[in-house]
Structure formats: structure tokens, C-alpha cells
Length: 247
Image 1 (spheres, rainbow, N blue to C red):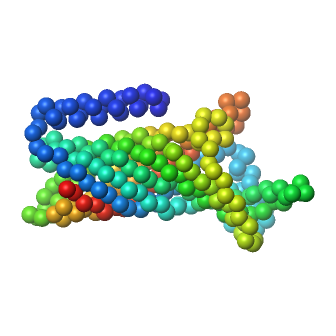
Image 2: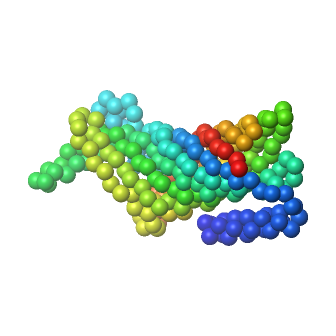
Image 3: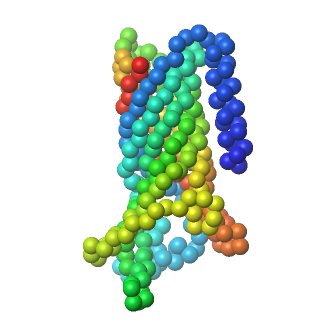
């Protein structure tokens, strides 16, 4: 699915860019962007995880294993606006974006003497992505110096690093771990694909935008021999706000 999508994505980008250079003679504009992303996962987990929920409720905890919370990250980006007409633009971007989640869960601790302890922990993870969105943007002038815009399109993302942090809620104990990427069970998939929609306002060369990004690729590698996990999925989603400047 990813290879087919990426091939179509690439061909669409090349075709659109070539068409622009052949038909339109207007000068493209370059932009820089900085902002924040409030990210989380769209998830569906197997019955095993709901058993943890029941355990936590029996022991007086009001949040279950599968309760995820949004995590704040930041993004930096550059873009090129190719005018296709007076109001329509093709806008490819190169984006560095932090995504991830926060979560309450049950943790099993193994000590040096091989004794074990089950504790209630808070877990957070941060995954660093490089993304290439290609958006079609519509701009409408509402005054001589002010424009409003609507935009949307697909993106391809590459996860190049990630870190998890676990902290016990009954004390100061905490642990960190590097998140593994690949196609083995227990690893996150490296590539992500999805869609972006957004809106913004421009004043002279400055702009403010808000956008929603939803991943279509399941980040989990499930074990094909384990039927209970065949329908599990975990997909990226985030809401962002950013400011930028056009040259």
C-alpha cells in the first residue's frame, strides 16, 4: 500500500510541477514556517489491553490502559507556492514535525535481584518525522492587504528517531528508551502516509495557519500468527497552529 501510494504521490507531484512550468510564467514564492502540534493516536487495540482497563478499575484507578492523551510538540517547515491561477496554488513543503502521545498504563518492573513489581506509570513518547505534504491551496482576497486561504492534500512521512519516557506515579523512578522502527513485531513502521486539511489568514507577507493531519497508515506491525491482533491499528493524528513568512 505504501509503495503504491508513494509512487502515485511522486508522479502527481512531478506532473503538477511540470505542468506549472509549461503553462504558467508567474514567479513562485518561498515560505518559512514555525509552530506547534498537539498530537495523539487513533487506536484500536485487542482484548488484552481491555483486560488491563478492568484491572485498573478494580484497583481504584479511573483511567484505563487504552486512554491516550495529546502531546505537545513543535514543527519547522519550508514551502514553495507555485501559482496555478490567480487564486489556486500548488504548495509542496518539507516539514520537521514532532508527534507522539501520553498514556497511563500498568508497568512491570524487574529489579537486580530478579524480583518483580507491578506499578502504575505515566508513559510518553516523542517521534521525530520528516514529512513532505503536497497541498492545493485556495486564496481569496478580503481586503487589499489581507487574504484568507483553504488548503488540503496528501503527505508522506519518514520517522527517523523516537524516544519513550516512563515515570512511576508513586515516586521519582523513571526510565527512557529508544523507539525501534522497522517491520518486525513490536517495532513501529518507518513510513507514514496521510492527509492534511487547513485554513489560514495572510497579512502582507505574514501568515497564520491552523491544520489537522490524519495518518492513514497503521503504525503497528502485528504478528500474523496471533489472530487477536489482526485488527489492531495505531494511526497518527494531530492538530497544529503555525506562523510563517513568505519571500
